[in-house]
Image (cartoon, rainbow, N blue to C red; front, side):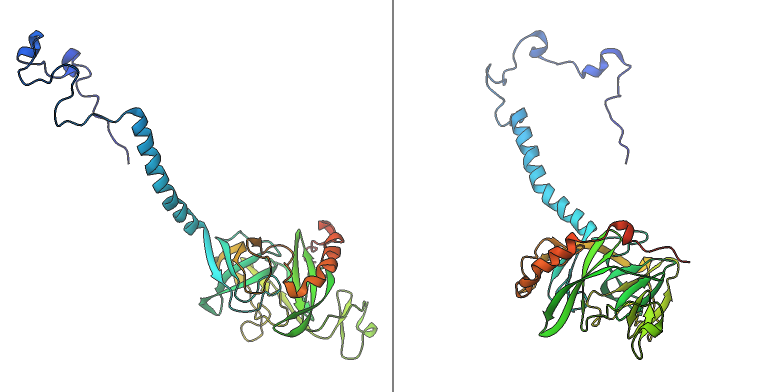
Length: 311
């Protein structure tokens, strides 16, 4: 709101802006009978603050106001979630508390983690990883995503146990992002050109044999398809709406990215670690550190981890 200064009053009236002329003895250079002796202040009247006191007072006000402004800013830009399920293990564990950035990129990048309203029941929030963008054609072979006929590159790390269940940990590389995924049964590594190159009841897709093929799903405009990192224990785009599959509309997205600010018991040194990169191994899986580092060193270039356009 604009304000109007009052110091313009009398600015064109010559000496009138000096205020009323003094009256009585003081006007003639004398001293009023009740005037304070020279060198003393007027009794009962507080002297004005010195420049130093003013600066200290402003500093105190600033120190008191800053935390309030910071909390408001954080509340507007960051949101906290506690993770109740294992759908994103090994990246996010059950009981993790994460902070995510409010808002949505348009569209979210492939490989990015987002928090969104579940399309079938919008009052529920889900957290998953973006796999396919608008226009992409997604198929899934034994849990492995295939985009526009191209399988997302992967690297086998080794056996990994969660909730007492033996699984296999992989790293997947999508664009410039690297993330961990879990499989109850390690996917086949048998390459193929046609289904005849595979075993009985198997299919050949994107050059690999597999047992179960889901899709294809063509991603509509203004939507993304998402998957959980715990590929056999996640309720994601592949299963929604009675198994027909569905995407997440952009306007359902609340937040993306973020980091763990309070890790689940037994989760290892994961506090304040980003949830966007390779998983942090819990102490129980410390033996996989060497294999994990090897997969990271051998990561393909971004050119080789970027899916081709739709044919």
